[in-house]
Image (tube, rainbow, N blue to C red):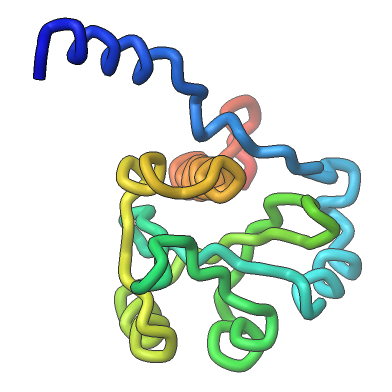
Length: 156
């Protein structure tokens, strides 16, 4: 590769948009505490769940390198006891995330044929919306895991 080609490649890489910023989602902050509404959303046919393992890796379809969005029916049948985190509403659908332990991750792989992918790898190949949701899901689940108590009053 010539010096000019390397320079052009570096400029193109720096100029590329931040793929993780491509998320247009209504986080519905005013309804997050409405448990009846959240429970109803979790069962809708068009609701999707992004499954993360305990390391924060997502599961992707083995043949397409796209996220494997768990449908609500599978969640209810096999993973209903795992608490979900509501991410928001986008494209007329509700989006959630679940964090699974290693046994549950193995079951999910067995049921779906999915494989694991890191956020860094996903940022290079996922469409902007999916990459943004993955980054948001990983960030919020990390925050939930690390911030178990209020920094002001110490309450859970």
